[in-house]
Length: 129
Image (cartoon, rainbow, N blue to C red; front, side):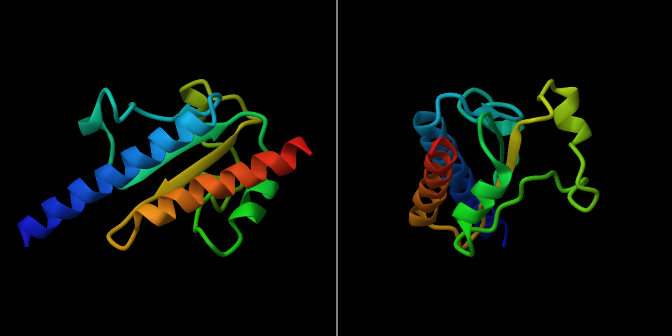
């Protein structure tokens, strides 16, 4: 029903915003791709967060996630080609950045948001070692 869709949208927005707040607090150099949900919450999809991480290694990041979290380091339109997203290039993202596309959904929990942040932190520690 429409009520269920609206409730799902509100929950997904809350989880997406919680994820962005946790990531931006934990990783000061992280870049948000798209409008900031804090200042323009209605200009973002409720279930999607796309970020760029400077000084990260894509393979280390994916290894840190393991089978715990489904995440992509490429855009949906270029994932099969293995090339940089033309959208991220157009907004000025450098070719060497690791880009993460993270989605939340109906079954996503607050604990899983914490898990994503912890996985990125593990990868950052590995990259610095």
